[in-house]
Image (cartoon, rainbow, N blue to C red; front, side):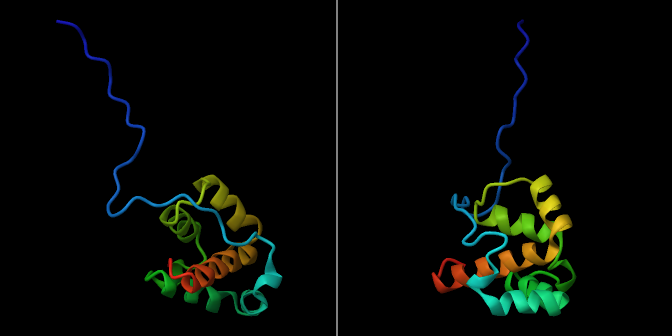
Length: 113
């Protein structure tokens, strides 16, 4: 009897429809695309984090986390990795959170959120 080769999993199982491949609607430093979001991020970071968490039906305490950025990115098929999300959130948490909120606002206007 011959040994069977090992099974290699190349994709993880998911629930629901497969995410579509897309990109961020704005860049990390595109604050002038929505000055209100950036002002909120600068002067009330926690409030903006709670808005993002609320938009995604998550706990308010998670709004500014790496996990929230990763969840959002994977939900919309945005390329990247957890390592990228960690570095972005570590190096510029305000820009990271503002980018997510701007993306939510744009996708909501496009009716894809």
